[in-house]
Image (cartoon, rainbow, N blue to C red):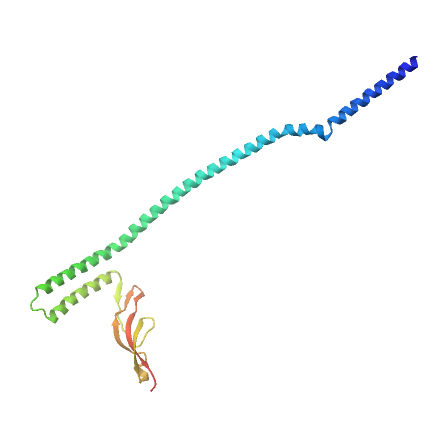
Length: 204
């Protein structure tokens, strides 16, 4: 009997040990591990939310910076425009004052011509000469001067041909016959070329 009881006891211990191993194996199966993985999800979500919050803060800061930058650019643009307008007005002021003096001269000429009897060609020419002299002075103050020299032959840089007359004399080719409109320089450059009539040689 004693031997049978010991055999039964050993069998019971073996069964208990097997059941414990089986239970431990079940805890480590993928199905049993799933709840552990799910338990970590809230932590990842919190980190994601924190990153989104930081990103949102960066965007808001950048938008605020851009708005300030746009305001600064707008103000600088307005200041530059004001400075530019004042600068050009300062440049134009002397010329406008000179034109007003010319206007005064024209008014004086008109008044004198109305009061002059009899009105002769000599008198008219004298008044026109006075206006011309005044205008030349106005231009000179702006460094605009009429040509000091008038080349006898066509100069493509200084002349602009408006009319051509034929000639059978080859020596007269490109000779300036008439000045239609005066040329002017502005400083060292040509402001307006002289409009001229020239001769062009054509063999008979």
